[in-house]
Image (cartoon, rainbow, N blue to C red; front, side):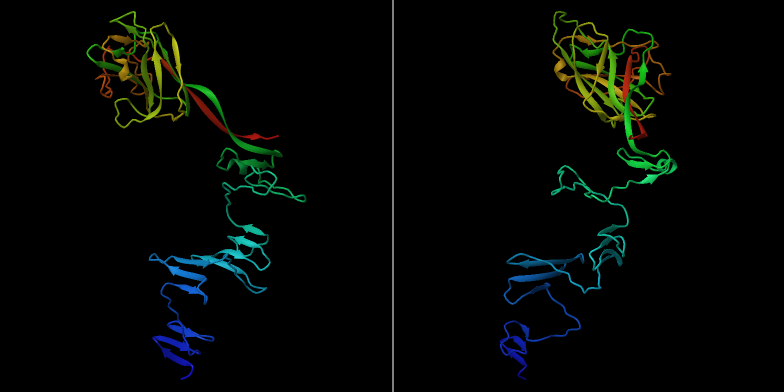
Length: 370
């Protein structure tokens, strides 16, 4: 008929000059429509709307045009815009402009039911560009949570929290205050030495270590050792400094799985020295009840064919089991090109190191802000 034209493999309805495989001039009613690539465009091809589903059944909407792209969602004066996820209404934009997240009936411009997190929120146009969040008003104020002491104490405090304590009538903040604490110390009667560290003419390097536990949980501040000097028996006039590595391990020296929590280097010099307070660039947290250790390892460059020795001060009794459970001194005797391999020598060969460990122990508490 005149309203149905088939020409050159193209079908026209309401037109006698179809330009596509199917062209309809007028309205069309379709009960189901299957579109291959999901592209809808105007007659010029300059504007495309794409609705596409990927193999994972995710649906994508996009708008492409030769000019600026604009999206408009329109409803009548009494209708709302609703967004659903998992069959539940998650976002509501009412006809009066109020938006709700987690609520289907927002009562303000932004009404959120649930927790809110603001991260890296730049204040572009406000008077303070460094503010992550700024509330501007000349008629209202910010109202902080108002809690009784019992309600406040029921919170899991995080440093930086601020509340208004209705019992005390004060703003209060949760903070962590740190103070130095001598958390592990062994300083009994002096023995001859702990471990005879150093280099041997045969190419061996001797390393030593000591296990310990701490009496409080805190961040490592310092380790103090005594008489970390050396003597060169081959050439007593040699004053070359010897480099040693001081490491704190999260286990025992003979445990291959023990990791290095903190480390630094130290120059040994042939001079009289008492306490050597050693600090580290790292500040690991040490826990009560856990086994830790420190080791002193001569650097490979410290072997030069001479016989030199460092004798850090030890204690009497030599191996004191009361120091801590299974506390012991360790030794390693390895060729200078090989990694240390520690063992407990036993007997009277070594003594527990004289040492102390200082931690920064934090106290978490609520404090008055005014």
